[in-house]
Image 1 (tube, rainbow over the protein chains, first blue to last red):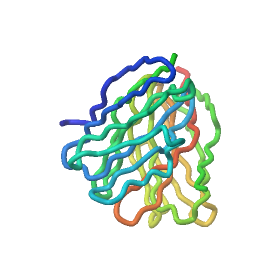
Image 2: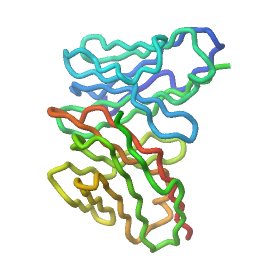
Image 3: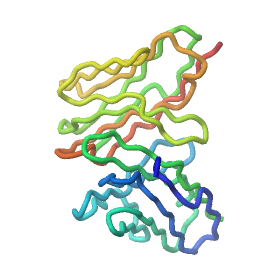
Image 4: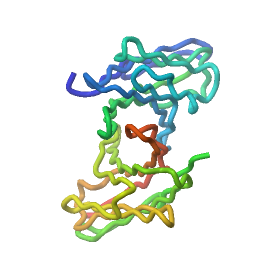
Amino acid sequence: GAGVSQSPSNKVTEKGKDVELRCDPISGHTALYWYRQSLGQGLEFLIYFQGNSAPDKSGLPSDRFSAERTGGSVSTLTIQRTQQEDSAVYLCASSSGWQPQHFGDGTRLSIL
Amino acid sequence: GENVEQHPSTLSVQEGDSAVIKCTYSDSASNYFPWYKQELGKRPQLIIDIRSNVGEKKDQRIAVTLNKTAKHFSLHITETQPEDSAVYFCAASKSSSNTGKLIFGQGTTLQVKP
């Protein structure tokens, strides 16, 4: 596609439910990143996929968070047993080689 | 761990004046420093970036300077315009083959008054 696509754009769910967020990177981009942006805050790194290498999971805040990238393209970020502090905008970015990271519009997640 | 400090958190300037935002990074192995502009409710957009083998880079009204010794880099916007109003984020990363994970500063809200 022309840019990084994320879905859904908004998600409201009850505390304790599981959620899945999807990212479709720019076609051909080998690297895919997930970041989290809490209200009025900077972007916090979560996880990074590069080609067939093992992902860098060093930013995941707890074992409730996981992500996978199938076929080197689409990625899904899963949050299990959601908590209110998980409320944030989840941003996905992709890049290739030394090209800059391009961001999607994000998924705004609200936990009631 | 890796950390990026950004100052100021808010900045208000008159149209036509210059604006300077400063960032300091902790990891001396960092080698890539992008700046992103984020308008309200929008995605972050890259406005300029610099690599560690360069000390300064300019693109029209925007420039970035890097001091590797001090682990410090700055964004300079000249002749500011109301449409420059946004939140600006600096970031740093270290990687050998691509841009790698970005560690972001906390952001600077820039207001340009007409």
